[in-house]
Length: 79
Image 1 (cartoon, rainbow, N blue to C red):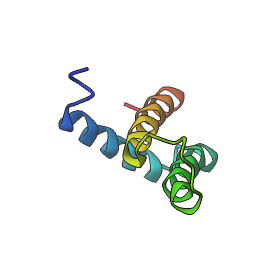
Image 2 (image 1 turned 90 degrees about the horizontal axis):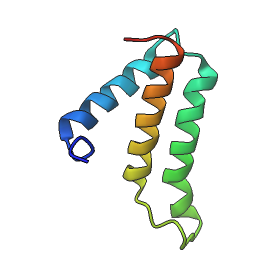
Image 3 (image 1 turned 60 degrees about the vertical axis):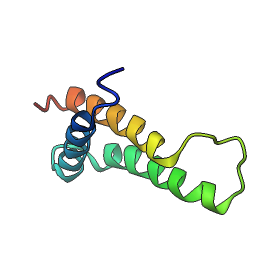
Image 4 (image 1 turned 180 degrees about the vertical axis):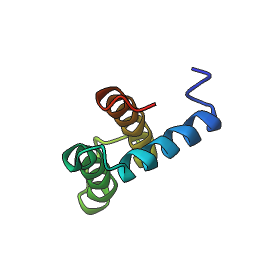
């Protein structure tokens, strides 16, 4: 729990995401698997009145970022 509340942890996660999105080793499909759902979640709640989405946009982005970073680093043996 302490790690989830650490700003340093999330800073490192987003630095890893930026590096993975810029990497030529990571396929475009894998990059789109992260960026499209995040983008849609940021846009759709504003366009459609969806009352059953109580999770904040940044929280969803943070969870997906952590998942994406772990998955891509494991898949492509990065780090």
